[in-house]
Length: 111
DNA sequence: CGATTGACTTCTC
DNA sequence: CGAGAAGCCAATC
Image (cartoon, rainbow, N blue to C red; front, side):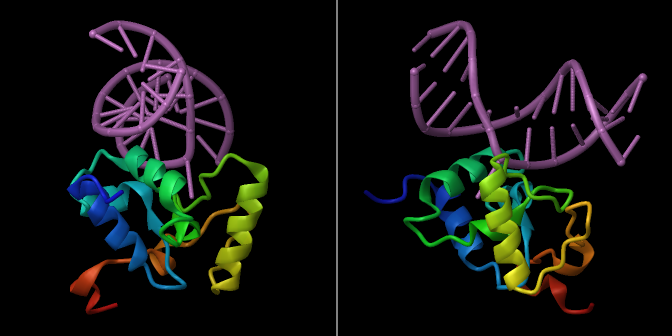
């Protein structure tokens, strides 16, 4: 069964291109995929297809730079994966977005 | 077909 | 900074 709509396709492509050591926000992915209000759809995609498509689900956090997962086990797993990629998380559980947030394409020339 | 439900976001207080 | 409410969207019931 193939990918149904364009939005989903874009999301998958974006998600797969998040480089190691960087993170993105749900709403951010949704926006680049064409639906600025589709953060929850991104969640659904991750939930449903992360395993099947080998998506870097752990590189997606909420807008604040915090792990959005509710499940305690999943949260620690994500924390571990991120840490393994060199992403630092402060003791309040927050990621420094200014430093780690992914920016698609060439908008990140200077920095 | 209306109600419920999220790994969301933004605004108020 | 924390808690609540409201907005948003698609899958599921």
